[in-house]
Image 1: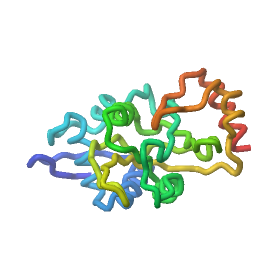
Image 2 (image 1 turned 135 degrees about the vertical axis):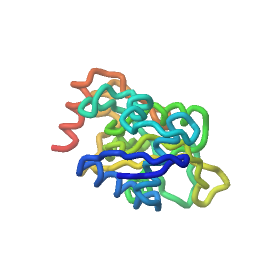
Image 3 (image 1 turned 90 degrees about the horizontal axis):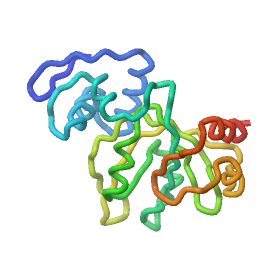
Length: 201
């Protein structure tokens, strides 16, 4: 893909699978695929300066490799969603993880890498879906729907479970339930994979 960023030409290569994800992300955000790439490059340093996209991903993503994702809990609406909007339905229908603009949420979103996985947790219900992160956080602040607040958005490909993982089952698998909007799961990977396998059975 040939783009122009900060007045300079730049060529970025994508595999067919990456191109498909890029086009899906562009539809979600309502921009062109080229603009998604420009935003991703600019967000790495906080200014519109061109860098190879692979280097940008390495700088911002904590994941050691695409096939070694990090796992996080995500609680939709815990930080103050508008009362008229179901934050869980919005996340699943719009393919998003949404968090209000706070320093804590900015720090958490900045740690997420492409391919990391989020477990969508609902208070008193449990984990209802798992999703793959599709993009690096672009640092953009959006006007929240039905509210005077502003929010961050991150594209996620969600897969809903037929039966939620209850809070009791969650504590059995990982030892605790989340309390923050985005919270890294710190237990051994095999325990998380076992929980995921049970939920998808």
